[in-house]
Image: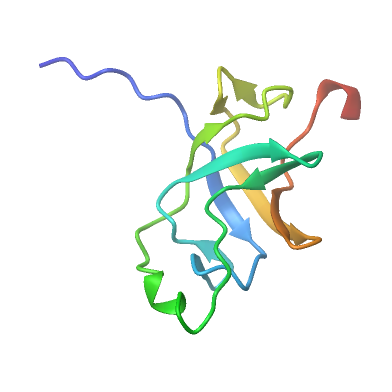
Amino acid sequence: MVQASRPNLGIVSSCNVLNCIHNLGQQCTAGGIGINFADDLAQCESYIVKTSDTVAASDGAGVGDVYRCDAVECIHNDNEHCMVNTIIVSFLNGKAKCDTYNTKSDK
């Protein structure tokens, strides 16, 4: 059986969103994240605020990789796939944002 080739996936190398249930020592354990472009930010869709009710939901599923990115104007985006090796996620105004997001006009 021939396997379909899987596109390169950006890996979350660092996550500074300390109040996310998937953050363990500034590493993403979500297993896979989606990036959504809204409010002029490329945002992590997997961000869930850690509370007394949700803290148990973090299961350490593995390294976070970007399975889909709809920030299509980003220079690293190819057909909604993140083609950069690693991304950094940080916290800004209550949102988890992709710091690696960059457009051609940003250069």
